Amino acid sequence: MEIIISFFQKYPVIPIFLTLGLGFWLGRLRWKSFSLGSVAATLLVGVAIGQMKIVVPDIVKTIFFMLFLFAMGYSVGPQFFRSLKGAGAKQALFAIVEAVVCAGLVIVAARLMGYNTGVATGLYVGSQTASAALGLLGDTVKEMPLDASERDYLLAIIPAVYAVTYVFGTIGSAWFLSNIGPRMLGGMKKVREEIAEAEERLDEGNDLQPGQIMARRPVIFRAYKAEGSFFSTPRSVAEIEEHLADKGWRVFVERLRIGGRIETPDVSTKISAGDTMVLGGRRESIIDLSDCLGPEVTDPELLNFGAEKTPVTVATKGAAGLTIGQLRREPYMRGVAVASIKRLGLNIPLRYNTVIGRGDVLTLVGLPRDVAAAGKAIGYADRQTDTSDMVFLGLGIALGCIVGALTFKINGVPVGLSLSGGALVSGLFLGWLRNQRPVFGRIPSSALWLLNNLGINMFIAIIGLTAGASVVHGLHEAGWMVILIGAVCTILGLVINLLIGRKIFRFSAPETLGSVAGARCSVASIGAIQDTLQSDVPNLSFTVTYAVANISLVFAALAVMFLA
Image 1 (spheres, rainbow, N blue to C red):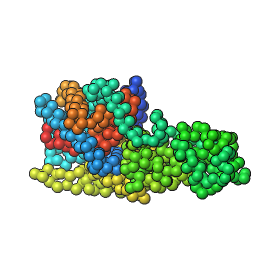
Image 2 (tube, rainbow, N blue to C red):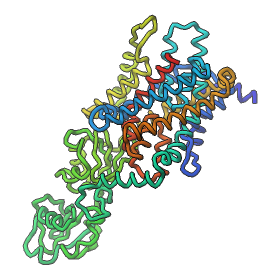
Image 3 (tube, one colour):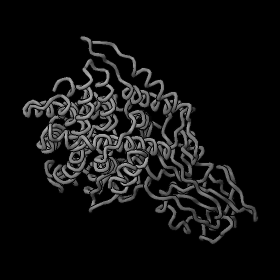
Image 4 (cartoon, helix red, strand yellow):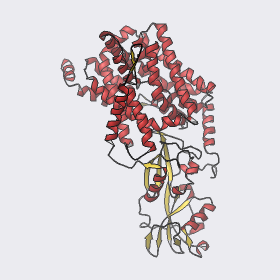
């Protein structure tokens, strides 16, 4: 064992990546609908391996944390600024209220238990899953006018208490919100009824037959030969599509075989009896059109063409603010279907009255030329690419850190955003700016996922490794009771905020559950809620509160540090 310890201490890069790999593996394991998640699992593995007293230079942790904060800010920037106005403002306010309530609970608990500043701060960031606050707290401690021993103590005790309270903060939140939360809001039956009502409102005004939801049906392509009385005279593509629309079918003519030649038509192209046409439309609209147009035929060559499925980020004034029903009536959506909507990486209900916002990612399906035209009108396509704007990434983080490093003193205490806060604010602003002017700053979604997940998990891995040896000592000093107090703060925070959301903000049940989970930045919780309720309606409120909580939780942690 001594050989392994000595080897890991000599080559710390090995335990770092070992912690990362084992953490992701452990985080993927599921029991029923529950999984630990990569962050909590990586922290546990890091603390365990950290008993070997692994020393990792702080700069390594800082670099990965900067990447995480910038990527997170970049991801939520459009949603964050959007939430400050309109319908999202109420949910944004709730996120701030939840952060204040949870901070107040921890401050009261710390004073009742006699905890010092370091233990109270670690208790807050762990029990309320405010991982993003750790870097800002560390930067703040380093700038405070403290003697070396006191500073070292705070830098050790905060992550130690965080480590032992974070695991229940994550697991407990997910379990409570998915199992007890619905019971507090009237029971599972009542919650499901409110979800059904919300879905019904999202489909109000739909001009389809009952049970049909146009936006969520896949596009298919079938070939028909022009025959029958309708083609007694040549008909234009526009006339055919209008004829089918009058019967309630939204179908488009995509390809033609005229006189043996394959052609790509426009709306004025004439089709005569005997010609073959490929029609594209959603499945329920194109099942059988033989009575209207002629018999379905097999023409492998005519049907041998590629359809495209492309994610498009909403960035134009003409598309942002439209409902799905309004969007699909736009001229540029001819021949194009919306397969899904994602907001902050979460699926949003694809319903007739779902409102599209800036920063949402729509997956468009159709012929390449049609998808390209629609993508240009909606925003910018996130086509498959392996390149990111590294100039934007590097200078963006550097600029944020420069701003964060600027401080001013109040009663001798330096006050500023800190490097961590600066990187986060820079990401928020530049992510929003990229969405407004999508001509620079491209970071593909896959690269953004890597920056986000590698950044936070590498940071947490190093936290676990470096704090692992001090966890036992920290617990001995704070008392093992801190684990129970952390659990109490987690559950009380959830109970109080569920009641505030329901009774004061008058949120619906799914909106309350999504808002509480989002205001804790708890991705594990929203996943558990979705699995339990079998609905993505709670995601609508989660995305707004999650975006705001990335700021509110961080600064609430500072309040705990100075007030506890």
